[in-house]
Length: 201
Image (tube, rainbow, N blue to C red; front, side, top):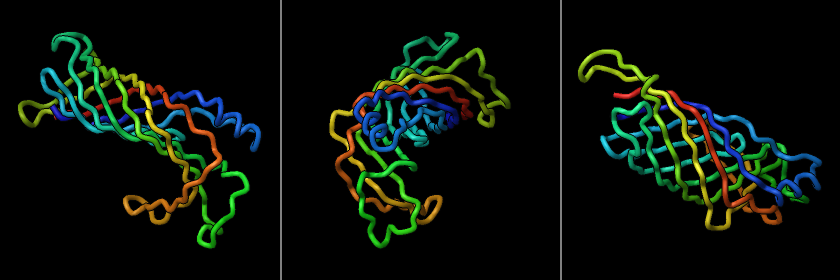
């Protein structure tokens, strides 16, 4: 089965060093808010694999995953344990590097502060079979699925901060950033949980 899912999620990460830096320089801490996610999964009797993307508000996750089914096909919940690898991203529009000198091309632009790091993680992904249903018959039939997931991610290497701006829009959008120093790293571990509704063929 091929399933396209959309949903909402919340990413939680403890950033004592970064929070102290924003309090000292901007008298604030960044909030954790809900964001959206999209997922494309291919499911067999025993395995699943696919691609996932969380919108960065402020934390985004882009991943490739592969896993194995933990429950039987007839169970009320189809649960998969997935190993995944990808990119963890943070985007801030209301803070900037301290004492930063703007270049001529950055003057008047809507500047953003971005953080990037590679991560590896484990995810428990669960489809609630009791809430799923199918319309149509045979190959033309469509299934509607819903569920929830819980992810734990670890970033083994140091991340990068960039400060810059976008040009273009949609698929033509391009971020023009410059690496900056002096900003504390975000925590190398994070948790992410969410719900989703999917359409399968």
